[in-house]
Image (cartoon, rainbow, N blue to C red):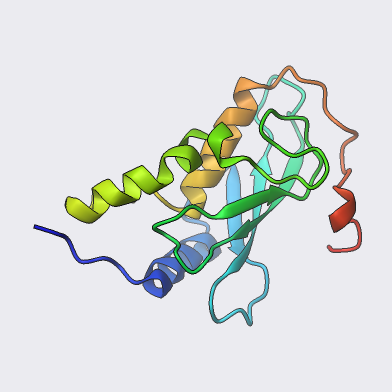
Length: 159
């Protein structure tokens, strides 16, 4: 028996509410890039660098794009802050979905969720993606990093 799918807009509105109220993980935050974006497409995220490595005490800014097929397909995520991390394009900060487990497995998990009742906590969300990225950063915390505060050139004039 198939479970009814939550419409994209409802899911994103729930994520927006959670992000605005700060109900999520303390090491990550997120919200709409433009409060006038009625399609809830473009988001900004922040990750506080994990401790005990080169990311410690750094704040990383990210852009997230939820396409028309979100949440069946993962968001497209770019680092705005420069970072040295496997799977991150060193020119534009685009994260290769194959590098981050939740992004790599997103479509499969979404298909499984469409056939089975939803768990209490939704494993596919912008917050879950940010947490997974932060965990990946922690796994690579010894890599040397660009100077703190540096941004990819395509984002230099956008704040």
